[in-house]
Length: 222
Image (cartoon, rainbow, N blue to C red):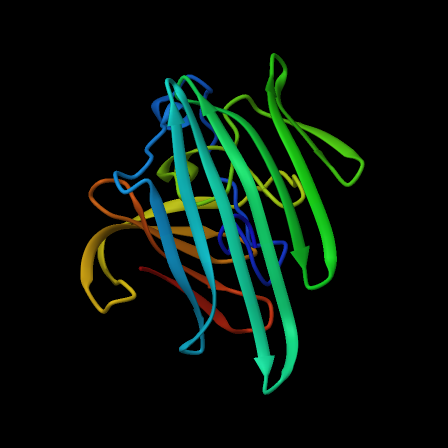
């Protein structure tokens, strides 16, 4: 999946593209690191914890670094049938997305990506292919609510995404400790349904994704 289911996880199509915005819009320039400077989630499938997803932040002046790490594993008894590890470093400067570097082990398939802001737009290199995304594009790493209102690209392989995000209104979601919190609900519409929730402080709070094997992944913040 991407940056959560990616960004990240069981399918490479679990990334979406929201309505296009200019690079100077408030969404594209948002840099909302949570006050805790870290986010951690349990990843659940059929009610069982199968992994973790963490994002932690470092700031220096007007530079923000977001460290990404998602690990998933599905086993039947002693046999591992699926494993996934996505890690990366996302950098923002002066409130604008600046760069992303990731590596991914998708059940034995190795992927890597490097993205940089250039005068022509966001230059993305992965698998020997170079793409240029619009200047306002963001990686779908989920932690930033700006992902819900920007052109997006897959942080695993650089694919430019075309599905759209729609605001579903206020909702209530469960955290890993059973606490219920209010959150804004967004639904991704397209080939790979994903839903994200953000609390009143615009902090990523939950995720739900339908994956290609028919199961549902749920993120519960710890």
